[in-house]
Length: 100
Image (cartoon, rainbow, N blue to C red):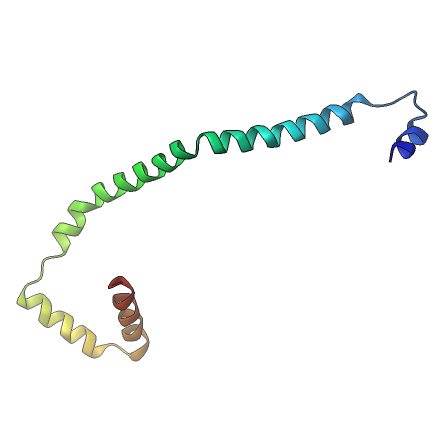
């Protein structure tokens, strides 16, 4: 490869830009890797903080909409009886997956 560079540039018009670009790209990858490794805990805690915020906001919604009374049970039973096999099996799989 050195011979190709020598023959192409004639050793007179060697471009420093290619070398600078190579050094920049190599150092940039190393910088990104070091930053990700050193801030892994901060990134993880930020993700959990966002998830906790979403859970706290949705707590009131779930609490208000999850009331079960005899009227709701009868409506739910009627709805399940009128469902076809596809949506009914999907609901079964979802309920069995959530029970783990």
